Image 1 (cartoon, rainbow, N blue to C red):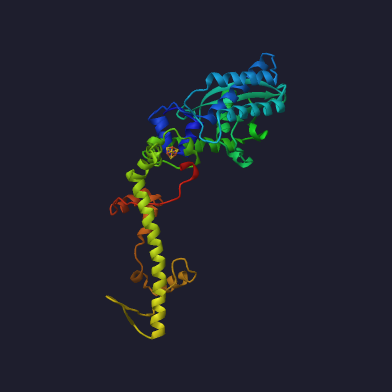
Image 2: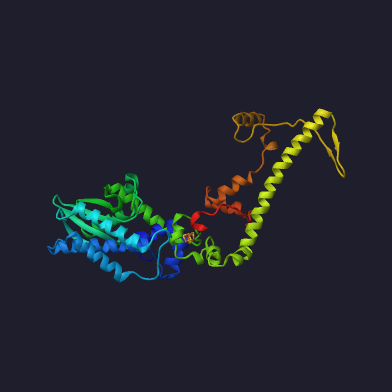
Length: 398
Ligand code: SF4
């Protein structure tokens, strides 16, 4: 079984197709999002900060910013993608400076604890048989005066976790398992997220029970990934930062047409078909609406004139007002009573029939035993269906 990391597991949850392309097919892409680059540069700077403190050197803020700007310049490359077109490299570089300054002002002179490691690699197993192996990097591991070990994680994103999300977060809790395996005598571990953009620290602790549940959940997730045959794309806000749009059925057409000149774009067969389909659909809706109004007018006319047939040029319309028997529907309150009445009279078999919609849902979600599902499936078959769903383009898709 391969070694898993938290980011691999998260990517599978986020989008199974992206996970497959990155980790199963190992398709490498040179492009890097500017947000990721910014995060790496800030992490590197804070690593230097604490590495130097371990060597008794406390950098001044200008020193750290000089280092940050130096590595920014040295590592910037042409394949870095800025998705938000209204922002430039300079906006992001300045943001990184601001994040470092915020952190520096809050924690300098960095002497409240002992740093045990920065960017510290961890390799550990979730089980005694060494089957479920994990790897990861802790931004900083430290020990406080009262012997509490702290797992620090720097976040440069503009999204702040809630306390509940932090208490359920997998990443740092997995690192806790790795730290406890490495140093079994450790009594107390604190998980700390530093949200630099918000000048906020989130702190969480894990009980032995929470850790045990996490181990079980993570093993189940790894089993699911190992046995997965199907890796469907899962669209989300993160698609804008995906490096595989050309290999994704949800984005490939966007990539194909995005660089076409306007006249070629409008004549591209896919674009032309969607435009035609949407125009027809709108026309259909208008016609349906108009037909509804004319139908109402015809019914009114027939009532008023007391006629059952209305003559037109080439056609005539027969108008009928019938009474139709109606019983409570599936979700109506009286339905239960009606069914009981029929069952008590031993007549249920005469009016009941197999609900194939419910049966499909049960089989698809494996809600019955495998034996029973297998027996039922002897009568089932897979049919290729199709559907077209039209929705408005989001701003970033235009
Ligand atoms: S574009 Fe979105 S849905 Fe497609 S592979 Fe990437 S993340 Fe998944």
